[in-house]
Length: 253
Length: 331
Image (cartoon, rainbow over all chains, first blue to last red):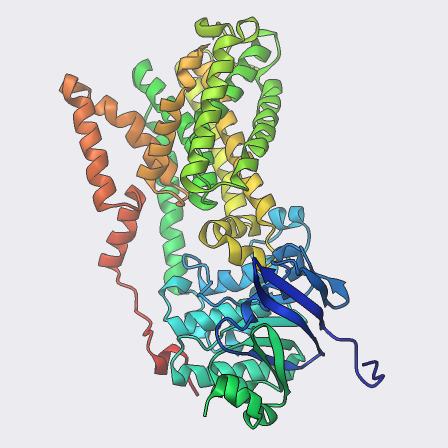
């Protein structure tokens, strides 16, 4: 565990248990995620991925065990506090602000991290973030859509805006909830390439929940497979692909 | 970019023209006309406040008239006790701000129709307090004889000077609201309206933003009330009942919720149209209601939405292709 060569984990999940009524959704899961890692969480429906995800986000208090981000216990923390702690996230469903421009969407994602409540009332209307937002918009190749209403973009484009928002505040950890869902192949390749580039450039840690195996296997550096609330395998994409338990439980012949 | 600044220039020109009209129109008119214009401005202020709470921040409130009441009674009691109107104003505004903050708390738990009922109950509560606490409010007889403010040699006792005084306050109130909605706060309000869960996940303290939306919107209601007192010089609980909250809501919806100038148009329709339709005598309410229904069916985004539609027709915007090749600007 205490390998001195390794940095402190960005995310640490310790013996997390969570039951709903008689159903044990998560059964004693533990893992660490270190800086710069891209961790994939996969598993069949009902395997406890989403419950675990919600525990990591502080939305569901675990019955036992602990989740900490950058050394702080996140249980019961409000989403805005967790975000200020350096956690960005995307949602399974599209989550942009449809009647605001792309630029305003991105600025909003950063403004609460700048100054105080009062300085935001009396300061500049963009909170001094236009340039930074434009850089991020350019990074995701959305510059030509800067002034469009986010709700008027295509599904894939909105996914990119959604992801860009998660990065705007310079988080140390980003949780991506089924980023590939509903995105067509060409757009998906572009999306994956951008995510990987962001990870390399900024050393941001990702945790990805995803059903699209192709996407997970090529984006992630490490994968954890859940089944019936427990970890059944952990390893590099190649190790997971050839793991017989995983093939039987999830990937199929 | 060019089209954008051109649009801005047109808007500025329109504002200057409307302001000039607001200054020149009452000149040489009868007192009654000026009185109606003044109440238009006052209700526009109340509607501006509700537009912030409902139009920008997405929190329904059926209690705006009760904040007008709080502002009106505070001003009335203080000016009757000999205070200057200017001294009573901050007290009334602060009172409304605090009560608005408190009314915001239920909004942290209940949304939509349920919130509408909570605020409706609050309006009724304020009405009952005003009616029953006779020692303070004069009960059903209300309060009368409040003086109009004087500023040095500028007396607002006559109708026209009072109109200009109200116009000045309205312009200041509008500038204040403009500063709020174009600041990061305005962005946070809109984010709360469009997707509160996403906003919270991006660090927006949605609890605080919700409370502020109520508090600021309520303070605008209080400002309108503080102006009603010296305008009418007689107030009673019946002037601030639920029906009046619904009227203010109608102004916001008819004008265009979430549009900065919507309340001015909405208040004009709700206050001025009955006057215009006066010649139809008994039929006026029928015609009025029919017009509102037709409007809500055909232009649900409010009258100001018509301008947007016209602009789309006259100057169609280049449609950005939503398909792949251009959509993602793939290399």
